[in-house]
Image (cartoon, rainbow over all chains, first blue to last red; front, side, top):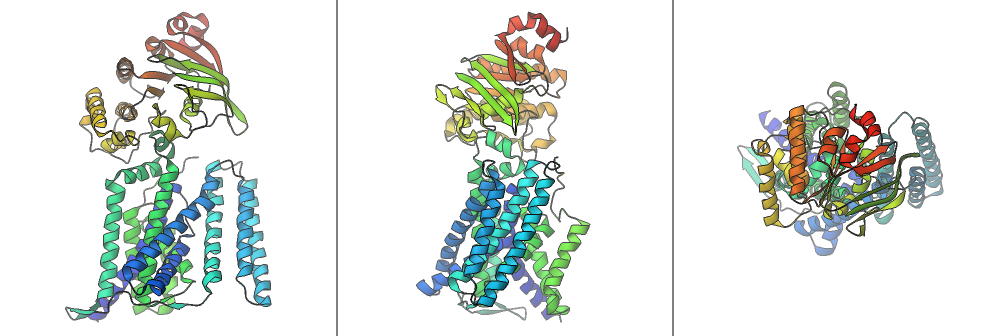
Length: 355
Length: 234
């Protein structure tokens, strides 16, 4: 019994480290833009696939896979920021025109990724439904816009844009490489250790320690470097940061780059840990990491780490001792619970919205 | 040194500034006084590039800066100490000061300015490790000015430095402004405390609902009857 518990704890810690790596991307972007980057889960999947592609070309090297995945995801993250979010921050771009273009892109991509006529028809119906829904939301937002400040209005637009971007990317992956799952190579040699009667693999130890090292590096970057200081300044007060001579666009791009880098690494780690990668995991991992970020207090970096680990451990324990089918229910239950009991999360500060 | 020509700025469809003309010469202290909502802060934010004018041009040392981004304008030496201090409350006092020098790479000069700032505000030195938000209002104003000075300003824009301060602090802040000016920094001072502002300024502009209503030597404004009645409460 004791052995099982320790074993599950270790599993939970691994899943939790992965969640934490992805959650950091959510929480940093939220800290600066007050935006949930719903395309982040897809950036994680793209990282996983880019790593896989690298192993197909260059052979099974962990380092090359990580580098290739990181470059791809960082470029994609920067692209998403540039295309889907920055235009919405500039007041010059009409947000309605922008949303329409985004929706058109979704529908277009969805058309391309269907195989049969039946699929095509259902997909048209589905996207018409989505279009209708978004149109209603936009209409509601617009008609009430005199009640709301401009910033909260453009935040809703950015959120819609983020969701759209996530859908576009996931369909693009399906379009480019096909919708099948792929086998992921083992990039870390299979060595087993026996620690106090518990078998641990090198891969497990590696995932935990590598994630830990990355988090420490991130902590140093954010708290001890000039660019980290600028990041914190921008997240506290954008206008004051501008008056210091900080170019917020550069800092925002930098934040997206770091978040995407961590997501790419998480993608490769997940692939090599489960030996399989599926294009649909992006949304689920994305949502779980989002829950982790909310649990820890969105906007808080230590919160994302602790939230990720707690979520991972609780989930794995639930799978082991209750039932595997409750895995997602547990995670979303935690989300609902935390939103009711302490919406600011474990480490979140209670910042009142200015009207 | 700085020249605003026919500057108009608006929030949405409402004009906040309407064809404003301001000229500042090197080494001057110029003050802009006016009531709440007259457009004083809007003038400073337009100069700093936080707001973009819809009309007109701004020249700084012969270069047009009216549509440039704030970081460029700061790098040219036009530095704003914003209204309400706007220090970073979660960052330490030292980090706040460091942020002022964000764009600068000249290490030795940064250190010299750092020494200058800490001799100007010895109180801050005792509180380097403290979070900025824990300082008193007067200390926060000192921190905001110190942070501005770390950006190596040629022209310092001060927005309501006396706002919400105890009278004893008001006096010392104005003394410090004079001292900064003596060290070669040109100053554009926006104030509601018109008497204090005019007493240290060379020239003054009176703003009313987005227009420049009057421009004159500070001495003359202090004795002008309409100004005395409207802004000095005599």
